[in-house]
Amino acid sequence: MARKKDSSLAKATRWNNNYWIRDREPDKICVHHMAGKNTGVGCGNYFKHAGVSSNYGIGYKGDICQYVEEKYGAYAQGTKYWNKRCISIECANDGKAGYHVSKATIDACIELVADICQRHGWEKVTFTGDTKGRLIMHKYVANTTCPGPYLSTKFEYIAREVNKILDVSIFLPERGYFKLGDKSPQVKKLKAWLKKEGYFKGRNMNGTYSKAMVKAVKRFEKAHKLEQDGEWGKKCNAVYNEVR
Ligand SMILES: [Zn+2]
Image 1 (spheres, rainbow, N blue to C red):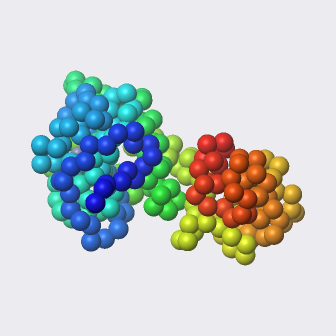
Image 2 (spheres, rainbow, N blue to C red):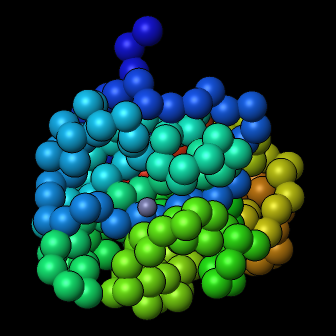
């Protein structure tokens, strides 16, 4: 079966077969560093013949490539148990002592982690300095120095920046969209934004997807040339993420 990109942030793919079929939903994001200065595609070409892998790789210019679908656990963390739990991301470094990672790579990593969280419904990313957090380092689960001294100091920053994005993200319910009658803190967040932007003209700012909310979403859909069904789903979210 054809493989499909998970993150639209991945501008290239280099698929390989170095993965486990997951028997559980992934619940961790493990960030690694590559063995030096490379592009996302270059790392993927290497993985095809290396017997190891990751779900994604980010090159030194911030270019993102996908190697293994998220539904599979890539051979990245060293053990079957952690490979099945993690979505893994490799980041390029400069290949010199200290393994400096470029700002472009770290910025892309923040975007990618936020995107993964949005799609998996993870409203916060936690970093606890051990395996309890959502965001973990390779060295927490294997005998390695990965992700290196420099990138290791950036995890708190990455988590903080990701959470800034997630705080203003709208997380959709299980069915994929909000409709009349729904009640959710996410609706409350969305309503406040629609009010600020002039689409919501109702008075009740609670978390209920009211008739006034349906009207507001229709105005938003009309303004952005979407089908005006008054329901807030993936297409509305995509526009929202662009314009907010
Ligand atoms: Zn690693």
